[in-house]
Image (cartoon, rainbow, N blue to C red):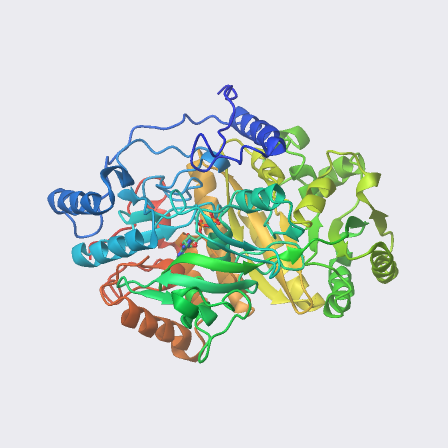
Length: 607
Ligand code: ADP
C-alpha cells in the first residue's frame, strides 16, 4: 500500500484533527501517518459480514423505532447508524465505532450507532431514551485510549455516546487560581493551544500522546509526566449525568453560588461535605461526566536528562536507587525507566530494519545496534526531569548523579548531548506539558501494527521488580513477542507497563497476544500484583483478581451500580461491573474462552 499523499486534517476540517495553529504538529502528524501507512498491507476497509450489529434483545424494527425517536429528540444528523464498512484509520482519524486495535474480530466490539449530544440536556435526553428502550450506552470523550479498547463498547451493539464532537468548550481558564473547567471534547492540544493563545504562565500535564481528551483520560485514571501527572488527583469538581438522567455536581459545586452562579470555591477545594464521591465516577459505569475542573501547573524552569546503565542485571539496583530519591521528592516528576530495546523501537524504524529473524530480537542483536545509537551500548535508560530555578535544578541533579554513580558504568546525558531526533527531546517537551505525537512511532515496528498495554502495579522494591520482570520475560518468550517494558517509578509503587505490539492482519499474532495478556494477568495476580487499567476485553478477568473477602469489592460496586442504574443501561461490563440485568447470563469473559471469538465468532450471548 502506498503512503497517503494528502495531509492529515486540522480540527477545523475534521473532528479529531490537530489544532490549526500548531504547525509543528502538522509536520509531525504528516510524517507519522505516512510512515504508518507505508507499513500497511491491509486495505482501508473490507465489506462487513453483518451490516448492522443490533443491541442485545433488539429486532431491526424495535431498533429503527428507537433510533427515529432519538433523532427526533437531538437532531437527525446527531444520531448516526454504524452500518458502513469499519475503517481503523490512524491516531488523529481514529474510529468511534469499534476498536481500531482489534484483538478479537473487528466486528465483535462494535457499536450499533453513534449519538453526538451538544449539551448536558441532550446527554440527559439520551440517557432517558436508553432507559425507555433498554439500549446499552457507551460514553466516550474522544475515544483515544488506544491500547485499552479505544472507543469500543464492551457489549456489541451498544450506542456510543460521543461527547467530544459537540461538547468541546473550555468553560473556564482561571490564571489566578491556576485551574480550568473543560467539556469532554477538549484535547491536550486544544487546552495547550488556548493557554498559548492567551499567553498565560500556565502548564498543562499531558500523557505521551497529545490528542486525547483531558477529561476522558482523567476519568480513566491516566497519567502524565510533570509534577501534576496524576490526572485524577489533580481534578477539582465534576458535573455528572447519572444513569437515570439526573444531574449531580461533586465537590464544592454541590453548594450553589450566589444568585445561582457556580460555587466560587468549586475549583479550589476538592471535597464537599460528607463522603468523597468523585472517586466512584472514575473507571466506572456510574455516570457520564459532562464537565470537570482541573488544576494547572505554574510555568517553571525545567531540565530533562537521561542516565544509561550498561548491565541488564542491575535492574533491581536501579529500582532501589530510585526509591529514596522519589520518597524524598528529589526526583522532580514520575521518571521512566525503559529497557534499551525501546531505543530501537522509538526511532520509528520497523523491526525488520534491526532483525530479519523470526521471534523476539535476541539480546546480542539489540546490544550491537544500541552501541551505534547516540547513547551507546547499555541495558536500561532512565528519563527524568527536574523543576525550579537553575540553582535548585543543579543541586538536585548533583544528588541524583551521586546516587546513581553507585551503579557501575552509568552515563549521564542532557538533551544537548544527543541529536535533535533523539527521543530525549520529545520527552523534554512532554515533561514540560507540551503535547506531542512522537510516541506513535512505536507503531512502525510491525506492519498493520496495533498494541495492547499490560499495566500491573508493584511496590518500588528490588524483589518485586525482579518478580514482575521475570513473569514478563518468561511469558513474552513463551508467546514469542518482544518485551517492551517502561516503568513509571514513584516512591512507593511503580507502574510496570509493557506494550504488546501485534499485526492486526495476522490471526495468529492476535491469538498469541490475547493468550499472552490472559497469562500475564493470571500469573501476576498469583504474586499479588494487579493492573491499574486494562483493555475492555480483559476487564472481567482483571476485576476478578481483586477478590479479597469473597469478592467484597465487586459486591460493593454492584450494589452501587444497581442503585444508580436499575435498568442497566450505562456501559454494562465497563471495568468488569455488570448491572443486574446482565449478571450471571454468560457475559463475563474470565479466561481463554474469548479466543473462540478471534477471527470471527461472537462474544455476545442473548440476554
Ligand atoms: P481519551 O480520548 O482521553 O483517551 P476516552 O474518551 O477514550 O479518552 O475515554 C477513556 C474511557 O473512559 C472510555 O472508554 C470511557 O469508557 C470512559 N469515559 C470517557 N469519557 C467519559 C465521560 N465523559 N463519562 C464517563 N465515562 C467516560
